[in-house]
Image (cartoon, rainbow, N blue to C red; front, side, top):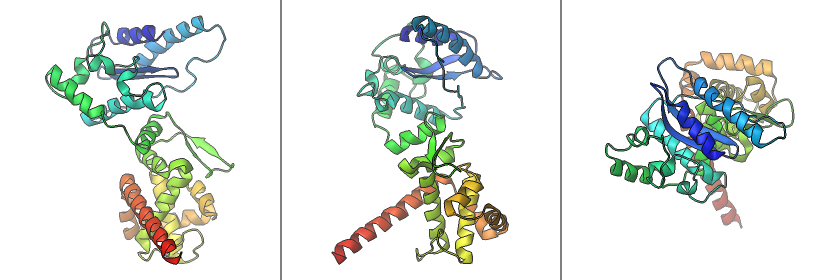
Length: 310
């Protein structure tokens, strides 16, 4: 079945203007990196593969059930660096799925072909290898070096969230727990940095960053504080969460246990304030980096204090 799927992927790209750059098949996933003709949508390739693969799977498994239960998703790779990074994450995907111990061990991907360890008839390795070096031997050495370092768990989680392979969980909704698709790269960075707490953890990161920007003493409590400064901080957290499409303002209001109407008024005032507009232009990655550094510093100081008191 794997060979049939792979051959169908190759066949679907035998059209002028298309090129199969990378592929990965796993028990529950098919990943394809392609170049397409100008004006052509990736859904054309998805349909050319999905319809036939569905028939093959149903023929092999007589139990009637959805073949592609998850929603098809495509996104552009707008730079060579983005393409190389996607190839690196796809190379390590089987390892994180527990299918093998090293990227080159997984036989159902383009990586072994690119490294020269196997050959698949009809698959041209040049479009992918040209991203690394002009000559084939140099490109293979550069590719091997590029994928040699295992991605950190947070880096892989961020990629999975951005690609829709993982849902963001949290207790910010009207029910005890929710799971939703991440809609932006910024939200993926925040949720991945939030760890197991998902959206709630991401909100706490933003909260810690905003509190440190408004009060350098570190004493500002955005949850319990009733001062105008604390209200301004809650509004900034909500504005950033909405801007990055992390969650709604209503979810932030539930996070702080405040009325949505009051928070909305404070958000409007915050957007009109010049000093707050400057903070709202901060990138999500900068917030993540600075908030994690701040939390590590606080954790170290707390540990030192416990040692001194103990």
